[in-house]
Image 1: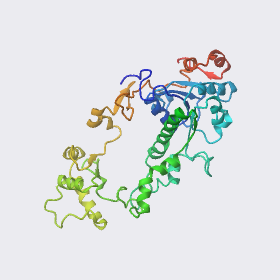
Image 2: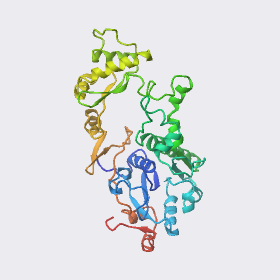
Image 3: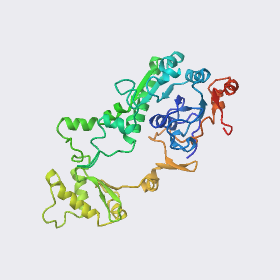
Image 4: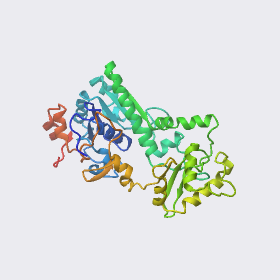
Length: 392
């Protein structure tokens, strides 16, 4: 994997100012950078907030330079507004009203650049009774109705890490909103504010399931439905070596293949339970569990490899980069001595690629200011409005 050449990727030419935050905002900025956008990350001059990784080890900060700006100084605020003048997009993830108090809210920014798309990433949204409340992924998906259905029957809701809220309901909707608004601005000449709230995105992701519920095809009791581990032919089963196989044999033809390869259709007495009768699901589940427990995961993976039974090994996260299919596709790459997911999706004519790895805050302050036409870098550095790392 080589560094992104200047001007490559489907978003080449798109300029983005990212006000550094945590979680979904940085992931959205990373995705835009992966796809070729020129993204500048505006970091604080001093570390603050939740720090899980040093920024130069944080893959969510990959592919873009960093400048360190003191937004408590008017001169620092002016730096951001100067960047905005030549940007297409700004991304921020403050609580509602904070950007306005800092002097970089949408009204001020749009006065500087009427074509700007101002992307706002929050959990609760810009308005509503909870807008000013603190929260995290688990809280947002809870209120949106997305957490309650996830889990086993008679058990508590199970937290799907922060994939469903922060990144699916948050980052991806922010990116879709930004790119939609950029496209519209290129025809209208006017930017706008994109209010991306995780509660909205998570609720939107539930569309199919809430539709099922409203027509009586989904029970309120978790773990009793077709797609939530209720159906024995859509579940996971432990193997002889303590690993797991996933089964997704929903359609009849795939289920028939599953039964054939498990050799469950040979000499069963009494006959195999009717998969269409939920009252028989417990016995069918017991049969499947007993059969999968007879062999190791590797043995079952070999049995089902390349078949239409919709069965696959549950691969531990650490081992996923070594799976033959992902190796063949180059889904994971080693870049700057770090194994990481390659950019997605893929493009036939303007392929995305990885730029340099994440850097420490302020590594690129001087070079970015010069490249973006902020000519008085020396005075800003001397006043402390911006900070340049000595090793930058």
